[in-house]
Length: 189
Length: 178
Image (cartoon, rainbow over all chains, first blue to last red; front, side, top):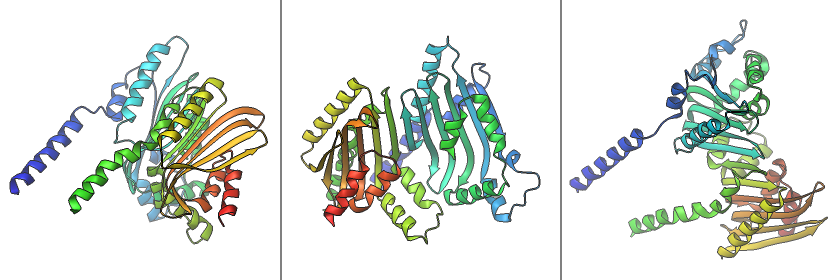
């Protein structure tokens, strides 16, 4: 009995090791592309989104503290780089197809598509990801990074956006740069 | 005894899970408008702190809480449409526990609903809609597949909110059942 227990533990451990070993994460991919000129990158600490004279309650501050940053990486399509674009897009797609990235929503029409995914647990989200692509403009990965973000609390945070304590105008500027923001950010909210 | 039951259940899971795969190829097909929402989404929604004092909201949450998947595919492309029609007829004929629930012919559209038996007569475990014909002035084909524990009386509300064509017909179904 004890032997089978050990065996089970061993198998599980080795499985865990193997699964870690060969999985390229989105994080890794994006770090690799850090110095690649073909990609557009924007990093935003969430602290930047707070209005100067906002009056957050302690609770709201705590919630906000679970959200670390917003990270956007985009590959704009400029005519001649189609083959490379397809390879990179397929790479991101295959990374996001891993079980770790749980699919929430998928939408697509003709040449555009958007996928909403997350990592972590449903009541402790670590990463919220929007992958959007448009055959004419390119693709983009939007990430909201945090630590154990709780969906119920996020709703409260949305309410503070309504109140004007969080300034999402900073984000809409981001969409304009990428030229494909309007529909994808709509998905995000 | 218990163990073997669990084992059988586990073995059966992938079998059930693959039920919807028949239409997954249309997700990445060009000329197809798709919408897919997963169990993760529904679980997440149920965690959200909505104002659940409102009975209507509560009813809604109860409904989606029990769903596994919603998939909707629409196309205007004739060759893709015929592929979709083939996929549906193949899927229906290959699944003996999927039976026709309702057939509507109205205003140039053909709508067929198929369902798989659920826990009682008002609940089904799978609902499949296949719509062909003239929709908003254009020839379209729509496939909608919902899996989970579906309350037929309430599901038309959801499909209406998702703007699924043919949900009006589904509403009539409630009346028939009542």
